[in-house]
Amino acid sequence: MGIEKTQVEYLASLARIELSEDELELFSGQLEKIVGYVEKLNELDLENVPPTSHTQNLKNVLREDTPKKGLTKDEALALAPDRQGDYFRVPRVIESD
Amino acid sequence: MVLQPVIGIEVHVQLLTESKVFCSCSTQFGAEPNSNTCPVCLGLPGVLPVLNKKVVELAVKAALALNCEITRRSQFARKNYFYPDLTKGFQITQFDLPIATNGYIDVDVSENGGEAKTKRIRINRLHIEEDSGKSLHGEALNVEGTSLIDFNRCGVPLVEIVTEPDIESPEQARQYLLKLKTIMQYCGISDCNMEEGSLRCDANISLRNEDGSLGTRCEIKNLNSFRFAKRAIEYEMRRQAEVLEAGEKVKQATYGFNAATGKTFMMRTKEESQDYRYFPEPDLVFLEVDDDRIEATRKMMPELPDAKRERLTKQYRIPKYDAMVLSTSQEIADYFEKCASLHPNGKAVSNWVMGSVLGLLKERNIGIADCPVSPTRLAELLNLVADGKISGKIAKDVFEQIVETGKSPEAIVSEQNLGTVSDESAIADIIREVADKRPDLVAKLQSGKLNVLGFFVGQVMKRTKGQADPQIVNQIIRKVLLKE
Image (tube, rainbow over all chains, first blue to last red):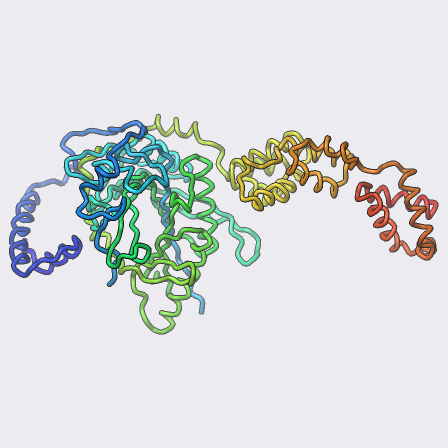
C-alpha cells in the first residue's frame, strides 16, 4: 500500500510537527513498510473473529476512591522544560486558522 | 423566512469523587496549581491507569437517572490530539462502546408565555472520560506568546452526556440543562457547580433547509451559564440565517461565546472524528456491568424530580407549577414536606415557601440549609393564621422577626401583643369614634351607598395596626351603623 507524501504531511500537522522535504521522503517510505506489514492481516479470513484489544480477557480492574499524595509541586515542575511560578510554561496554544 | 433550528447539546459533568478517574490524585478544587499530580495524570512513561470504582458507580447511576440502556461490556479508547493541556497526546475516553446509550429527559417548555408542553429530548450516549488540564493564555500573564498550564484538573472524572438533535429552540435547550442539572444533583452524581467548572456545556446548532434537510452544523464551546447558553444559541441561529440569506454557505467550525458582546466567534475549523484516530486503550481492561450491579444501583436511586413533582401535586393538593418550583432541589422539597407535615393547608405552605422563604434565600444569597426560619417555625406561624390568632398581614411581619431573632412565632405574637383584635366591643368603640368624625359618610352609608364601607374598614384596620380581621370588622360596622 502506497503512502503519499500528502498523507505524511497531514499526519505531521495533526501531531503539530514540521517535517523537512527529506524527512517527508524518509517517513513515507518507513510508514509504507509499517502499514504494509500490518496489511498482511487482511490476507487472513477473520470473518468470525471478534475484534480484540487485549490478549488476556480481563475485566473490571478497579481501585477504591481513596486520594493519595502524588508528586509535590516542585517534583512535578522539575520535569518541565520551562516553568513560571507554579505553572508549566509552553508556547502559546490558541489556534488560528 | 424563519428556518427551524436543530440543536444538540453535549454536557460534561464532573463526578463527585475524592480521587481522579485513573489515578489516586485528589480532585479538590482550588488547590495550588500543579499540586495534585502524579506520573499517571502527567502522562509520564511506563505508568498504568486504573479505573476508580466510584466513577463506575456514579456513571451507572447517571445512566439510570437518564433512562439509558447500560452497555454490559464497555471499553475505553484513546482520542489522539496534540494539545499541551493533556501531556499524553491523547485523552482516555469511550468511543464505540460507551457505558450507556439511548436515554431521555422530559422537559416542560412554555414558549412565548404559552401553556407548558412536555417535550422528550433523547440522549444518544453517556460516556466516562478524563478531564484535561487548565491553560491560562497571554493577556493575563504579561508574557506574549506564552500559555501556562495547571494539571490539577487533568484526569478528573467526567461523564459526557450527548443528546440527539431533538432540541428545537433556545428555551428548550435551557430547560433541558436545568432539568439535567437537577437530576444530577438529586442523585449526588455531581455538584454541578458551574463556576468551578463541574458542569460545562457545548451546543451544536444547524438550521433545517427548506427541503427539510439539515444544514451544516456549528459547535459553540464552553457555555458556562444556562442563560449564556440560551443567548449564544439565539445569536448563532441569527448568524447562520444571515449567512444563508446572503447566499453563502455555513462553514463547519467551532465557536466560542463572548458574554460581554453577546456574540459567537470562530475558534477553529472543526476537526473530523477520524482525525482523532480513536483506538481501544490497551492499558485498561473491559468494563462489565451486570444485572446485580444495575439492580443494586436502582435500589439506591432517590425519588427523581418528575416523580417527586407528581407526588407533591397529589399528596399536598398543590398546583403542578408549585410542585415544579419546589422540586427544583431536593432540599427545598424536603423543607416544604417537613412544613406541610405540620400544617394541613398544602397550598398555604407552598405559597409561603415559594414567596417568603425562597425570596429570603435569594436576597441573602444562601442555601435553604442556612434558612433562619426552620420548617417547624414556618408551620407554627401558618397555624396561628389558620386558627385566626393573627392576620395574614401580621404574619408577614412575624416572619421577618423570626428571621431577625430566631424566636418562636407564639413568643413574638404574645410579647408584642400582635394577636388579632377580635373583641367585638373594642372594635365597635373604634367604629363609633370614626363615625363621630365623619357624619357625612355615615349618612351616605345609611342612605344605601355601601361603597363607603371600605373607608370604615380601612380606618379600623389602621387603628388596630392591622390586627383585626377585615371580615369581622365589616360585620360589626354593619351591625353598629346599619343596625343589621
